[in-house]
Amino acid sequence: MAFAANRPDVRPANPDFSSGPCAKRPGWTLDALSGAFLGRSHRASAGKARLAEVIARSRAILGLPADWKLAIVPASDTGAVEMALWSLLGARGVDVLAFESFSEGWATDIVKQLKLADARVIAAPYGRLPDLAQIDFARDVVLAWNGTTSGVRFPDGDFIPAERAGLVIADATSAAFAMALPWDKLDVVTWSWQKALGGEAAHGMLALSPRAVARLESYTPPRPLPKIFRLTKGGKLNEGIFKGETINTPSMLCVEDALDGLRWAEAIGGLPALIARSEASLAAIAAWTERTGWADFLAEVPATRSPTSICLKITVPWFAALAGEEQVKAAKRIAGLLETEGVAYDIAAYRDAPPGLRIWCGATVEPADVAALLPWLDWAYAQVAAAYAPAHAAE
Figure 1 (cartoon, rainbow, N blue to C red):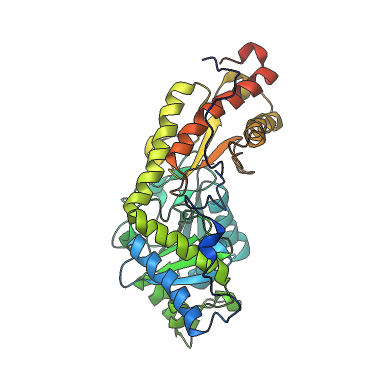
Figure 2: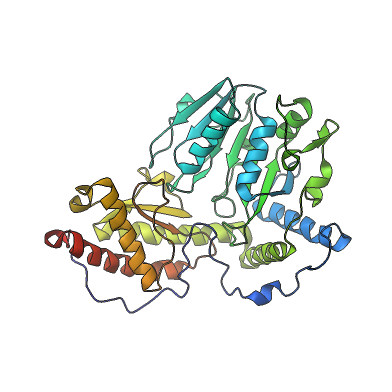
């Protein structure tokens, strides 16, 4: 398939396709922050009310079960996951599923930092899910619901038994607000503000099932816990944390931005509308890969394709023949051309992932902008192909 050397006429209205921090919601301006609770203590009644509002609106949009607890915690999704790992693990054996950069990071923390004696890593290469039949749900299980750097997600929770002895801890930072999470199959769920609703960084969310709370109140980890990890007080859950009484000082400017994103989500129809927007962008890219001839999803099984962090690999022979570093350079040249043209920012594959492209298609990205981007991908590919392999530029 040959590609036109001319630049496409239509440009995305918003070229922000970064996988984190992600695009602001459509129509966002700094005026959205004009009512921020600034210059005051977050512990003042009005400050606590705003923090509690973030929790309440998040619960409602996501459909969090009434008996779950939800808190705003430090250090983004990373902080939320680490709080769960350090506070909960060790009571029984743990299986950790590693199939991309961040889930591999959790495996490293569990094995090399926590140094749990009974930890198994069930791994898979980029593009695949691990062998789910290997999981023992009598043990605790740690997983990323959506592989942010591989574009591979769990299509559903059918592999998790309703009756299980262990806890299931899910990093859902690039899944929450864009996918239906099976709350009855999970026990700990984490996410951050700078992903699906385009909020600002450094704040995480930690959701706990009653089973997770029971673990916290019955198990004392055999290790010191830093202050920002402590979820209990006197052997009982510190309920204040789950009412907006944050462990450390949050940015009230970021709180206002988070509220703006949540209100926008409610206004467009809540979770079903958010999911539909992401799925529409995924469908557009899927149709494009069918006709383009040079790119495909990194996710090998269609049912596991992420609708948010969409990762693409380059499939033509000339690219496969390049050495590893040259593949990285070629893929980055495609992304660099698009950035120079101002049509797509920050879409090179994650540094640890196979060389290719990564396009964020969460709900704050307009599906029309994704459609407008696709001819530009073909154009940029043609320029790079002509430079690397003129005889194969039309492959």
